[in-house]
Each structure stands twice: as structure tokens, then as C-alpha cells.
Length: 324
Image 1 (cartoon, rainbow, N blue to C red):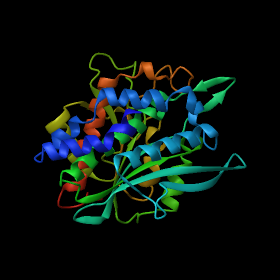
Image 2 (spheres, helix red, strand yellow):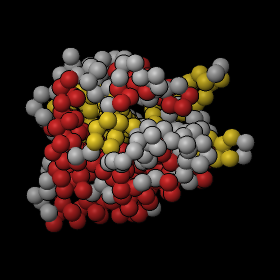
Image 3 (cartoon, rainbow, N blue to C red):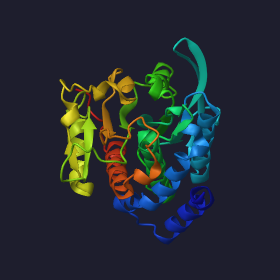
């Protein structure tokens, strides 16, 4: 993998040659071509659909750990393994699995933590067909890797975030948000000092129900616990990416109930302000046809850059996000 071989050298070259990089420079390293390379591996048949507790999922967590090690980003666990092991009840059966945690310590307020999350698992193999989960949630997973790399470039250039950032890849989402519930029940970093959660679950495709403008992203939950977070998110988009922020599924009477259906909800239940980034469902949702060639990589790049800018503002502003 290019990332495994070139990331440390890339960081060294960029920072030595250009000491005065800007926030936008770091965001621009989030690149459609790199996202494609990562996703064609992560959502390949080799990972056998990444079902919780399977050999395919184990390959996925090893892959994620190796990416963070190659980027020089520290483990988010005290033992340095990058793994939070867990044994969870799945329909009456104990299943062993792991969350993956990587951590960039803040330079000024290290005790305050922003969590960026995505679920690493998918549906596995059914009736001999592999459910690769390129959009769900390979897109969010590889976006997190690119966002982490951008922040690590900032660290290497002496512009690391003031607050700490935890990159949290959770398992068991498809089984009922189990990995994120395990983390919030057994937090590695204090929930009281967790300032926000940005959760990325399906950002590589477009909703066929939307007509016209494809440069959009659905945002869910941004104003439910913190108007301050909502306003910060709007401002970051206006200043840097100018995507259409669509709040269709944020309505309290949304019949899809998406607010309750991804990993941010376990943070929201603990009064932690959240934003859920989502492109909507499509005909390949939870089907073996959710494959990497159908991802719109230029749009995935734009959306990941939006999340980076929002995370940058949360991590670097003087005051933590205000809980209403």
C-alpha cells in the first residue's frame, strides 16, 4: 500500500520544505486518489465483508492499526496496541471483537477530547456473496484515515490541534451500535471532557431521491444538543467547502429515525454534542453490490475536507463547544 510505504517520508518532506502551511493546505492533502487506493483495499473481497467477530474483520482492524502506525499517530489505548478488545452479546451469542483507537494529543488542552468516529464492520458473507460495504462504512473509514493524516501533517509542522483528537473506529454497528456503546460504557477518555463527536457513516455516494445539486451532505444532530456546534459547522462550511448542508433527516419527526441509527447516538445519550455525516441510502445499501467502483471519490474528498475543517475549528477554538 502506498500509504504504508510513503506516509512518514511524505510528512517529513512537506514539513521541512513548507514550514508555513495553512489549515487549507492540510485539508488539501485529503485526496480523492488516496481515498480510492485505501477503499479498494478496505472494501475488497480479501476482507470478506468485515462482519463483527470474523477473520475478515480481524484483517480490517489490523489494516487500520498499520495505517496509523505508518502515519506516526499514537495508539489511543494505554497498552499501545490500538485495540479496545470486547466480548459482546449478539443475539444470545458471545462475540469477540475490537474497536480501533488512534490519538493525537492536544498541545494546549490535552484533557479535552474531540472524538471522530466511523464503524469498521459490515454485513460479512451471506449465501456465498460478499457484502463489501464500500459506502457503508468503508467511505467513512477511509475518510477518517485521510483526516487523521491531515492533522498529523499539522502536528509535524508545529501546528497540531490545541485539543486532543481520538480517531475511533468502532465495531458492531451493524449488530446494534454495539462497539460505540461499549466505548461509551467503558471510555478510555473521560466523557465529561469529550467535547464533541463527529460521526461519519456513508459519505461516498448520492441519494437518488435528490435531484440536481450533488454537492451536498446530510447533517443530523448538529443542533440537538448544541446550537454552538451547529453554528460552528455552518461557518466552517461557508468559509472552506461551500457544500449544501441538508437537514432533511434532522427533523424530530423523521420517519427513518436516522438520528438513532448510527454510532453518534451513544455519545448523544451521554450529553455529548454530535454531528452525523450521511449521504442517504441508495439501491446498493446493505447489498453485495455496495462496491468501490460506485463511490464518487471527488465528492468523498469534498465531504472529508468539510469534516476536517469542522474538526479543526472544534479542536482549536478558545472555548469548548457549549452544551445547551
